[in-house]
Amino acid sequence: MPGAFVLLNTELGSEDSIVKELRNLEGVKEVFQVYGVYDIIAKVESDTMDKVKEIITWKLRKLPGVKSTLTMIVME
Image (cartoon, rainbow, N blue to C red; front, side, top):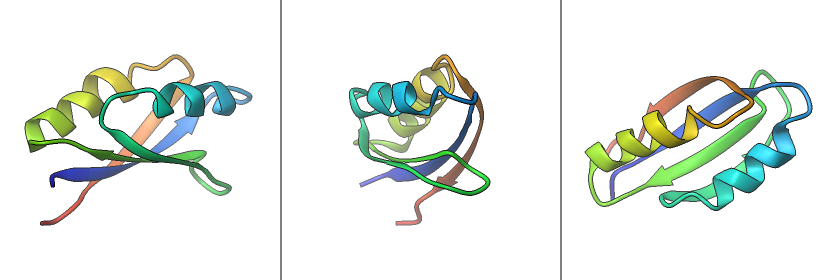
């Protein structure tokens, strides 16, 4: 199944609300709040790679409080 891991940098203090929103998005299978350079890691899966890219581009990256992302596409 096509998928990607997305590492997110967030505005200070917005981590909890972003995690909640991510858990409710279609295609987001797992969400982890982490320490380090990034604040959150999300695992995204869908039927097609185009749908994965759409979820990341138009849903994850547009969430209020998301400053930047790094996307790693999973090799099949």
